Length: 247
Image (tube, rainbow, N blue to C red):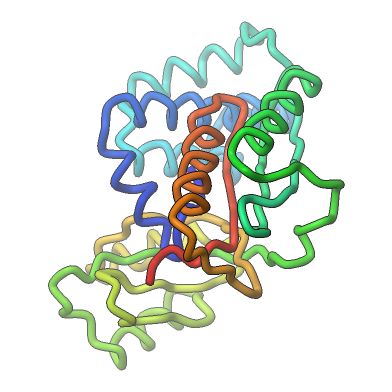
């Protein structure tokens, strides 16, 4: 659920573990609950946002029965927690910009925990707006290219047909990345699947305009720990940063 590296590859590796998958389900569950409460509509056929969230859950290998159980619970009003969105901004070691998106039923608890993680691992939580200006939201669809078989000319044609704006291929990664408007990420991902591509993820992400590189081993260690602790915290939905950690 988080933008760890340039193409979020660490996230997908972690997602293969059962414990990580359970946490992902917890986070997606909150999004589904909030969506149903806000729209008053638990029918994915008539609720595009809910439909996208269910697709997101399935792409993270969440069993259908778990999804159905959650939908019935939320639709029946049996979910008593009232979650609200909040975003915390700050700096990691050596000034790495960090944005933390949360869904919480207790802002004071969440703010205290997030601040604690920043302080513990060599960073500091800042005021609203201190780093968000460095990020812009885009739809990001990541395609598997481990076999290096994706042809750039064919990909360009397929991206445009799917409703995407641009793509990146190569750079030493085993992926190709398609960019599109954030609200079209799920749709473009589904279209790319129809074209025969293996889609690793499709979601709206916060893309930094500039990146910061860490060279000090202690800074790298603390930054990894900061991200790990934030991402493991149930109230946190997504963590975005501008750490160049792929070179």
